[in-house]
Image (cartoon, rainbow, N blue to C red; front, side, top):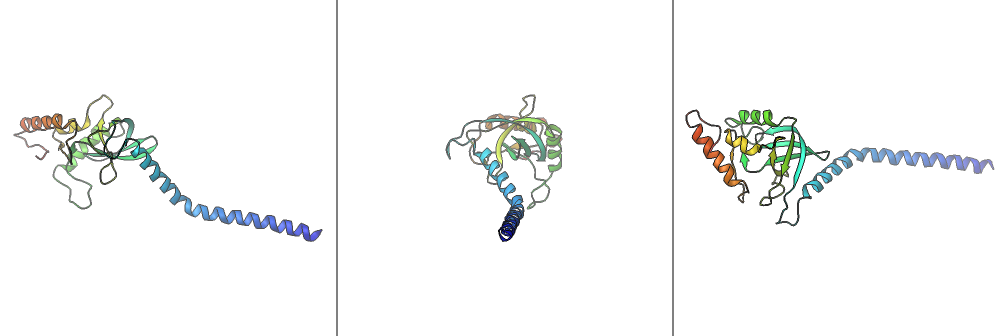
Length: 196
């Protein structure tokens, strides 16, 4: 009877040791698992706008700006996930690209974007004529301030960015082009930030 009892006690200790070992191994892989889970959530959220590889639907989402990266790129919290947004239809001088030096007026453009967007609630809108993601995995969206102001238009109108077409014309191409022409005409004497 004592042998049977000792066997059961040792067996229970063995089971506990196995469980602890499994937990130890899992805890080692858990950070990587969480990272992969976050990437999967990001990918699923980004792919929600896809109907097919070539046809997109227009989608509007609301989120809070976490960080302004530069004049045309922001980090936004969407559904609890951090997403990098590349604003459709505008380009601003580079300030964070590690392959390039800081471009002229880049800091001013970034500062203006921060003034308009830092910690603000914004509405993001896709464009059916554009891809959902750019080649860097950023969501392509128009950004609207809480009062409905089109951020991209405002940046162009004030000379902190210029109209930019990557591949196909976007739905606001003409509107942004007109804003750019006005900015150039109005600021001819003092020099504008935009490049044409």
